[in-house]
Amino acid sequence: SQTIHQWPATLVQPVGSPLSLECTVEGTSNPNLYWYRQAAGRGLQLLFYSVGIGQISSEVPQNLSASRPQDRQFILSSKKLLLSDSGFYLCAWTSGGNQPQHFGDGTRLSIL
Amino acid sequence: AQSVTQLGSHVSVSEGALVLLRCNYSSSVPPYLFWYVQYPNQGLQLLLKYTSAATLVKGINGFEAEFKKSETSFHLTKPSAHMSDAAEYFCAVTSYNNNDMRFGAGTRLTVKP
Image 1 (cartoon, rainbow over the protein chains, first blue to last red):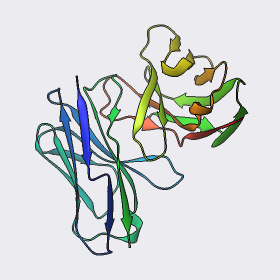
Image 2 (cartoon, each protein chain N blue to C red):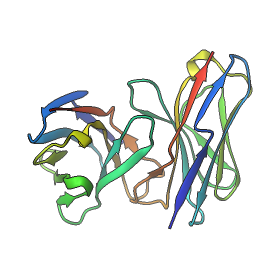
Image 3 (spheres, rainbow over the protein chains, first blue to last red):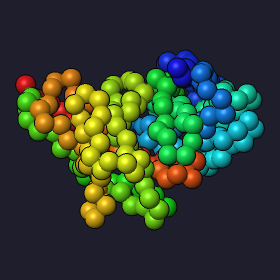
Image 4 (tube, rainbow over the protein chains, first blue to last red):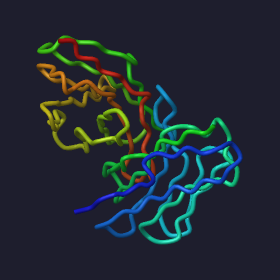
């Protein structure tokens, strides 16, 4: 069966520090991968998605970036975090087409 | 472009009462619709999906939803609420050739004893 892993589960970072969140999927190949952010009391904001290695589409311009160095690995990064980057970050995958997305357990990011 | 609108950011019901969470979609192509549930500090869990087969879809935890094209709706229902149903619920839409999915703003369900 397929599983998705996100880490870390929680992270507290100072303003201006770098960020690296990792997401990996097991049990499938060539998945579509997604990064979402969920601010407190708000819905999901799609940040990035990828349909293949090295292919990244950005939905919202910001100081975040994403990379897909391997088929089942998706990384969310920042060189300098802002206070507004606080939130709950979710990674998801799908086999594509009309199939549902499957989510990881999320990373709670707090910026101080 | 596709989108969904969830009517009511907060819904409160008594334990044992009917749960009705509303979702309307907008799509220029045949939509595929989903309901997800999110418990605090967790990811989203798929409740059910509509992918153009039966219009009445049954999901996990006793939930079901009916696709009504004439009303562009996909409302989520459960005949009798349990305390464990308290969570945030998201409606989502995609289409066959889409690479992404659009989510509603979510509805927080509270269940009163």
